[in-house]
Image 1 (tube, helix red, strand yellow):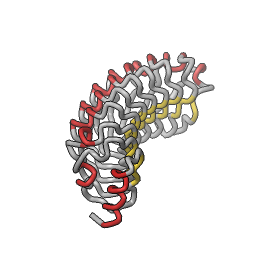
Image 2: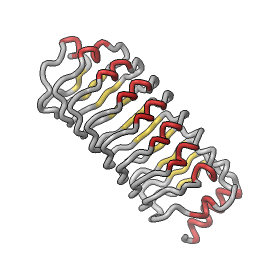
Image 3: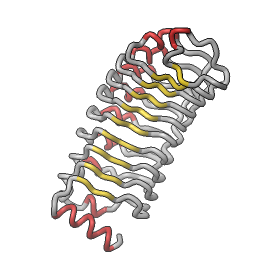
Image 4: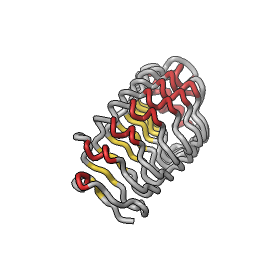
Length: 232
């Protein structure tokens, strides 16, 4: 650990900082100094974007129990520990642009989570437990390898913005029509062939992005004012 990093973490402990910025630090391991004692129990926001992390420690939730926002964008994280589900206060989790191949079911225990960003990973499916996130407002799983979405997604009753661009989806689950808070649905660059008729009847849904779905044809007339982009 560099002296500068050590000083930054030590100061955060001494002054009980609520925000800690460790972006662009060339980290390839999670700093053990963050987990050594109880000095960062007051920490609410941890920024570790654009490093080279491959894993997260199992003790993360135990040592940083009051995290509200965790930003890990642009690392090399392959898997997140099951203990992530113990971050009871976490509201925002950004794991975009990593190397995730699997999302552990324990994510469904993050009952305070409002924003989950998983774009540009290697995910082939999402756990059904994601439907347990009833406070979730934003879900971004664009640029993965998803062939389907879990049926349980309709239980995310607070979901407002769903982004699934650049995946391998061939259809829109009809259950999405039951998401009465959904305002924006983006499914561009997939393999869609049709949209559920009930989708256009949602009062809250204002924007549907479906451009670059080459086989998508025959949109219902009542969706014309909502669909943005339908070119092949």
